[in-house]
Length: 413
Figure (cartoon, rainbow, N blue to C red):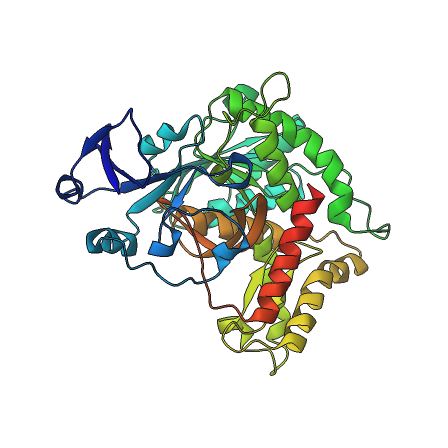
């Protein structure tokens, strides 16, 4: 391996980088800070950076659905580097990205500034959850909507939500000007158009929304590029996995529509839709003694809708019970619609507020992140060194389902 230094950072690679200053391994291993592994991968199918949590993730030749599987560890790595991986102090960087050196300067804030665009039912409920739960983790919440009355309503209402004793640092909610939308640590897209009225659902509501939502999202993806946005670009609107891919592609196109990959890194974008599917599966699992174990041993994977996979027990997988929970979770929103209401409270809080807070706190949660050209929902957490995806010993029938969902999402967009 080659060892380099750049901007007082230690870089390691199996490739020769002639423009970097080479140092000895003895010098490299004295670093108390994060070290960076440099490699080159196909831009459309790989992230700019991620957390290297075990040696099998070092110098990957390809990123794909195998990121979800535990792999045998390589024994050729120096022991001091493996220790750093165990401490989550190693970041992998794909130097195929033109702006790869930006990763060396990334820092996570102590308290996050979060800006939410779209003050409909979901956006309003989501910021309510963030204000109630975000003390000590969120510095402020900015809101934006084309409808001025929506902004006035939520600014008044949510800022009047206070505990009896105002000792906690409850984040303030403020109205944004359009030019300030990306002056934040996390941008949250909650705009939804084309939602069918209750009782008029002729096909998957999420797919109906995609075309309209994608057109609006394109403008924000371009804005993020132009502002050189370096925070997290979050998508809560449906369908999150496809909209995330749209944001990645659109932000990385130049003025002539050609991909130049000078926009958002794939790892900057994440979709928040799987949290509520897990919550819905848990809701039904509690009501059946045969599936109660899902609450502690189950997992959710895939998109928020068709292609969802609920695994009843990751240690003792039962195909029939998993299928039952999957179908119930997929159709849970129809139960609310059958009662005459749009189902937005659980998605806004489970997929939105709770999952966003878990992200900024570095906790395990469900969201869609980039895996080999697809935004795939799975359990993950965010470290200062990047995203760590949960890796499991997956039974073959379950992994086959995951592969099918992965290919389906890849073929849609």
